View 1: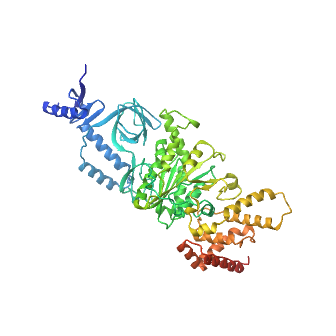
View 2: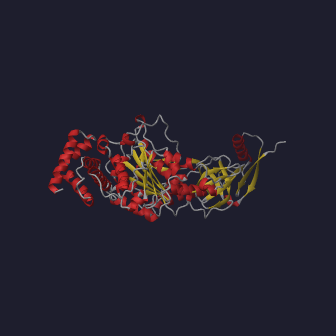
View 3: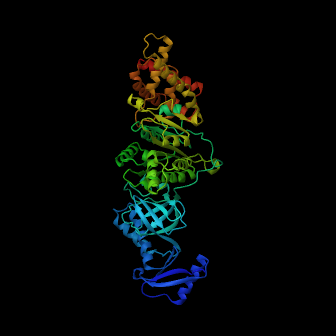
Length: 584
C-alpha cells in the first residue's frame, strides 16, 4: 500500500484559493513525477506575505520571508566589497539592488545543520549536492560541499560559524565554488575568495572561474621550450626552469625558499609575465613584508597576491592555492605566461588534514588522509604550456615545501617531489656557511634541463656543474693535506671562485646577458687569480663595466639569445681590458 506524498504549504494571513492549490499541485506532480501529492495548509505568521511550499527536501518560496532572505544576500555581497569609506557609493549600490530586485522562484533543495564547529557544518536533508557545490546558510554565510555521505553532507565554511546553529537552514545554490577573475586583479591583494584586502576599493571582475578544474590533456599541451629566468645564477645555469614547468623549492625553515620565489617574481619585470603569489598559512606580518618588497621593486604592478594567513580558518587556507590557479588559468587561456608561487604546500596539507579529521575521514600515514597526494597532484597538473592552437599560454608553478631537519623522505615532500619536474633543494648547513642561495647541487635537479635554456646560457654554463662537483670532492680529500701539486691547487682555486660567484644578495636578480658574461669570464679562467674576498666587488664592477661601456655586446646577447664564437671572443677581450685597467 503506497502513501500519498505530503507537501506543506505555509501562509501568513490569506490562505490560497483552490485554483492556486491546484496549480501548485500540478507543479509538484511534474517535479516529483507522482500524481498522489497531498497539500497540507498551515498558517505561519513568520512567512509574512505570500507562501512557502515544502515537499520532501525541496522548497518553493513565494513569500516575503524569501524576498527578505534574497535581498539580504544581495546586501551582504555589497557589504563584503572593500568600499566602506565611500558611503555615497554604498547607498547608490543598495538602491540599485532594491530597484532591480527580482524574486527568484525555483525549486531549491533545503537542509538543516545537524552539527557545526571549527569551520565545518554537517547538513541533513540535502541528497543531491555535488562535490565542490556552494551551500548558502540563513545568515548569508557560504560554504562548499567537501564530504558526501549516505545520511548527510559535510560542508567547509568560508566565513565565521558563530551565527550558524544546529537547525539552521542550508540551501543549495547549484553553483560550483569559484572566484571572480579579470585583468583588474593585477596589482591587487585579495583573499582566497577574491575579495580585496588592500583597501584600494572594489575590483571589477571580467568573469567567474571554478576553483577546481580538470588539468589540460596531453593533446592540449606542448613541450616546455622557453626559459622562465629566475635571475639567480646558480639556478639558471644548473637547474633551468621553463615556462610551463613545475619546479619544487624545498628545504628547512629559514633557508631562503621564499626569497628565491620573490627574486624570480622581481626578475619578470618587463618580460610580459603575470605573477601570482599565494600565501598559505603565513603570518600576516610576513605577507605584509613581502607585499612591501614587491611594491618597492615595482613587481607588484604585474603581480596578484592571494593571501590566506595563519589566523584564517583552515577551509580558506585549503582553497587559496586553487583560487590562485583559477586566476592563473584565466590569463593562460588568453595566451599569456603566468608564474604562480605556492608558499607553502606543507601548511596547505596541514589545513587539509585538519578539515579531513573534522569530517571524520580515516587518518593514514602521519594522520594525513589517503587522498592527500591527489590534493597536490590535481593542483600542480594544471601548470602547463598550452599548444599554439590554444594560444600558447603557460602556467609555471613554484611550489614550496618545508622539511624537518633536511628530511626529504617524509610523506608530503616525497609526494610533491614525485609530482613536480624537479626540485631546488636548499641546505641549512650551506646557508649558515654563508652560501646564499644555499642550493645543494647534488640533490637539486631540473627534469626539463637545457631544453628551457637559451643557446647563449647553454653554451656559457658548459661544465660548471661538473667543476663544482669535482671541487667539492677534492676539497674533502685535500683539507688535511699540505703538499698539493700545481694542477690540484688550480682546481681548488677555480672551485672557490665558482662558489663565491654563485653567492647572490636578495632582490638583485641578474639579467641573462649578465649571467652569460660572468660565466664566460670564469670559464676562460680570467677570475682564478683574484682573491676570493674580492670576487663580489669584482663581479659588480665587471657587470657595470659591460652595461655602460660594452652595451653593444649586452644588446647582441639579448637580441640573438646565442653565444657565437665572435661574441665569446669579444667578451673575453673586454674582460682582459677591464682586468688590466683595474690592475687584476
